[in-house]
Length: 255
Image (spheres, helix red, strand yellow):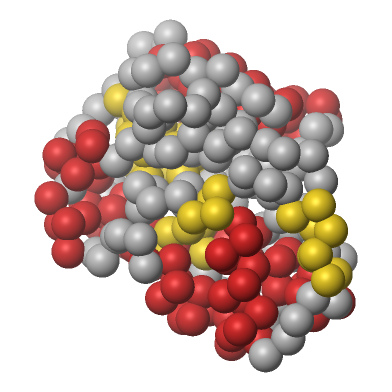
């Protein structure tokens, strides 16, 4: 595969790049849920359109990363599905969903992968775990009541993408998440415990979070059943990656 980009996901994808000829992965887009920059959105739109033109001409398959966060799934009551109603709650979610629709309208092979909150080594400081770890270390954490986060190990994400590409799945959208969204308070409590630190919590406005359905993922990749996804999965992910500490940089907004 041809991995476009050199960021967090792109670096991990290079481990399986030799296994999938004829696949182009757009791993250079907007990765911050807090992003509202029209320039950043425009750059990703232009990148995606250029890659679509390439794949139409070459017959390659395009993999596009979207989000399974509350930016896309913001209707409580039942888990968000790939073919269900979507009401993006943020500028980031609206941008990603617009690109999803544009890609689906083009005559090209594609996979749209809606990712949960991916956790792994050497993440940028604005992403969830390094941002929360930095806030805990600073002694002050901002909590948004009602926020829930579906954490997934980047190693599991790469294994799932590798398997998905092997199935030949095409022109479809797939949620890649654990299926277990965890209250942000439990995540912060575990980070505090793991780091041996206690921070002061301040509270923002309550938010609404929707669970993420993994039914389609499990049907396409049966091996997901052996990845340990469940209510306690997030603790193992945090324990695995917290020892490396947060990267240098300012703390971001966790919820």
